[in-house]
Length: 112
Image 1 (tube, rainbow, N blue to C red):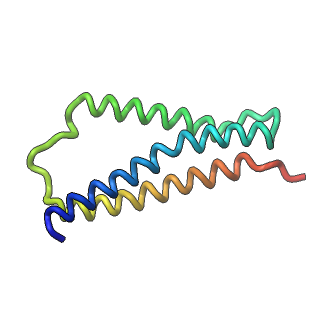
Image 2: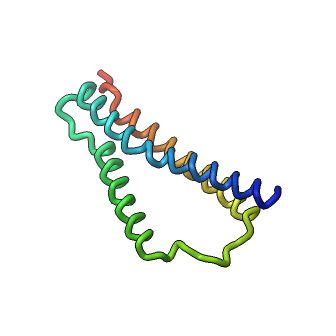
């Protein structure tokens, strides 16, 4: 993989990972509304924890950005970063999928 291809690949994979991560609060809000309809009177702890956990992680990410510790001139070559980005995308995909499954299961109607 050439330098330019690796850079393009890393940017694309990063954008996909960010979109997956940004979809979590939307799914949590939808799950809360679904849970209120399907389970009236319950507290819906898991969807609310997912939503507030996401907000907390967003605040941490903003604080990390302002520290400037993320920036560096002498990083690994883009081909190595492309491999790391692929693994990161798989981890993000597995985590988001697990959260979606948890939101779906915890907001299903109660079995009688």
